[in-house]
Image 1 (cartoon, rainbow, N blue to C red):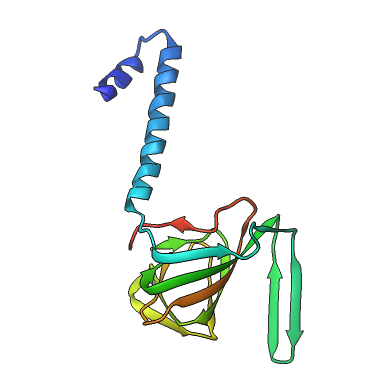
Image 2: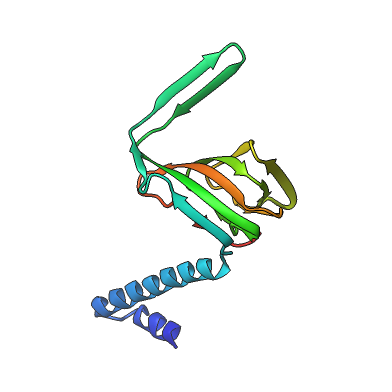
Length: 175
């Protein structure tokens, strides 16, 4: 019915454009909200996870261009624009998981205790195990899930580097 009215308003010969523009704007807004609602409906929420932001709020970093070089070692970090740095302690109970998600920036993950099992969205059946004292990096946009498949709590200390004002996490549908 709405589609018929919309088509009728845009048919040749319609003279008053204000109702047509208002209806079109309403339809576009409804579609946008519908798309957002569908994304959340398909998202997989975590279970058994608590997060404590160690700094209380994000730390604002200006542009960076730093490096460290040695004979057998090299690291560099370069950013453009402001960056929010979140230092977060995640605790995941046995059997708990983060749900499928991605990040708008990079994350450096260290396993403080327990063993993290990470699954990637492009290969969701292959586990990647990280015991205490190891770590891994997550690239921006990489869909993944971290699960605690052990018998003790899993503790992760994560540095999230995301664009200024961006969220730390983006819920994603299961692959």
